[in-house]
Length: 322
Image 1 (cartoon, rainbow, N blue to C red):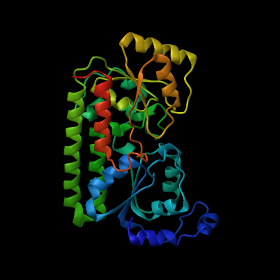
Image 2 (image 1 turned 180 degrees about the vertical axis):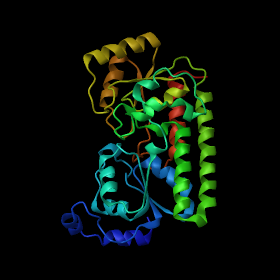
Image 3 (image 1 turned 90 degrees about the vertical axis):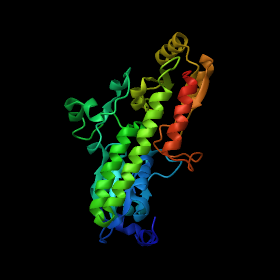
Image 4 (image 1 turned 135 degrees about the vertical axis):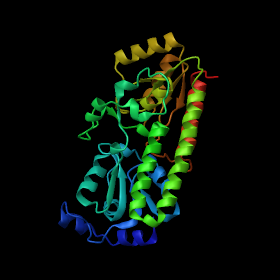
């Protein structure tokens, strides 16, 4: 965060929120060279595309679960002051509200860039194609017209090619804010796409020849990995805090025995108690698969690419890939 932005945020009094209601916190114009990103994957893309010409602020700090984010006065002021705010409508209600009530600059909702896929659509998808546009039907998109995700999976960033599309959109927004940097931010977005396409090829190759294709995870956050030939089997469905029912446990016991599964996956940022208990009952190992919604205290020095490659290594090991 730039010195000038910190100075402005420090001057925002609490009374502004109490007296202003839903009105903006300050009357200062937006800072075209400040970008606010709602959570980590969006902040990482913004940093890669922006380069040194913009300040990028991540609203979700390491160790925080982005779904549960509540904004402070300073963070709400950052949303107001930013030249560009990047978010995913419906993923973080507090951020959506702050944008609606306070944002003065440009707003990029990534669900206008990528088509979120229904949770059920992920099961048993064969192969991974490069043309993502063709994978989404008009019917799927119409379900998201109101931006209420419902049965749509918000974890699109686990598909590197979809994240590359967001990078291109960020470049377009930044070029509009500072036309003098347009060539640079578009070149940065092209470099980002090259890195993400390379990662996509690594996943396709690494998971092409495996002893098994079923992956047991804590909750249904990994469906976009199904495009690499995986069958994602969540322990507790959509909520990471839910408890498995006896029927869930019986189903998973049968699945582990039938498919020779050796590993179940816990996640970062949420409790692993349920997975540890399940693994003990089933006699299998526990490993960690990171949904990369945010950084943890342990992964604060890593980035999206390193975390995705760590996930790939864990998947290759658990599924006996060659």
